[in-house]
Picture 1 (cartoon, rainbow, N blue to C red):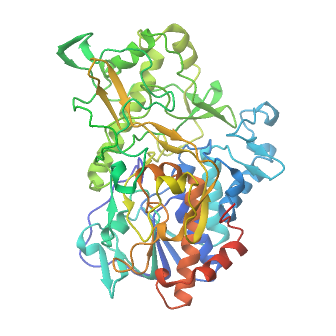
Picture 2 (cartoon, helix red, strand yellow):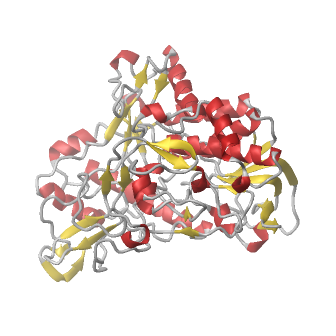
Picture 3 (tube, rainbow, N blue to C red):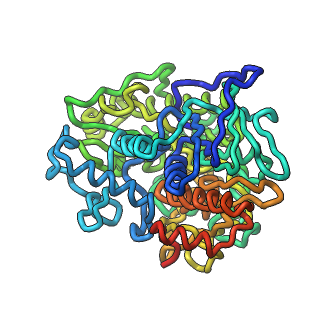
Length: 541
């Protein structure tokens, strides 16, 4: 539900249309599309109610340098998505701005174009969106776009512990036997009265080590490696704090809080002069807000381009890197539960911050000449996000609400130290949380906090119970994105291939539960397992 060009409208009083299907999926993410395909493949009717115009969420919204970990555990339709991208990049016409042999083929741990497995893990946003739209056409999926859930009490009807229908702000009503919340935010889950958590749990809650506040823990390079003053006049607390720094004192390590890891846009950039647009000066641009970055450069730091990850056609998937970067730290705490209007403000605020950052790097005299010269080679690609000013349509909602369901995935589970019950898919990426706050240390220098990267000893299984609400809270809803997990376990689960895997498994369970005239919570696991394995899902090593 990212940087949308359209905003939700208020609901008319009478329903415009009543639409029915066996399964109603709310959301426009990769999980939503894959779940819909699976329902169709299993012979049931399905409607996708998408607030987004563009399908695929982050997978088509700029995250082209896929976070995968162990590729072997990506099966089913999730793997098919990457195989379709492989087919796309076999065509000569797909290489418009670069010869195929010029592309470096660097992926995360494997070649990007993997001929052995016929998969492509690194791709352009429009190519990914094309694959999602191909799924829509081939499976004749019914999708209603720009349809926003009415999050008031009028937006949902429940009977006998289950959802009978949901209503959107346009007044349309969607009736189904099973519902899937495939949003990054968990709006339907919350409206249905399912318990959830926002923020970081204290380590004491689940007996964890890496949850809660983690001051002084630096597992990536996203911290101040040299002493930098946080004050407007260096070394003078009376002069006040620079922008983008919190005045709040840091809590004790391991303490829980309502802070969530930072969001950013995964920018797609081009260095092809025929396909790039210079960074525009954004409205309200204030160079003073980037003074902290200028001070980082003064320390000799030179890692600006370390996360300009190459994707085909001389483009990048540009991600946050370093102490001051595209992550807009501390500006998203209210996003998960905010109104649509407030979320739009937060998204716009992130956009202006990040566009300002790029403009600063290209134009500000405080930026070292070597950095600035290189920056001037980059711009927004003319052929991506063409209806949104070439800017990604999806903000990277790294974490929002997380359900407290039948089974909570915990740190030990995501580190492959346990055997979880009833696996329905696998994850393998590091427990990866971005910074949650930027604060002033007791010695008067600035530092970031919350950035964690702990690797599991092997791939791990994800429990069926983690996509199920407790039955007494809702007995016909599955939640494959805002899964039941602790903050730090979600740091690994939250990867796009995993959301597709869980979307397929959720859809499978929904259809089997309809067939068995029972709740998904009562579905015999052996029955579910049999179908998942038949559909080539990988459930355990």
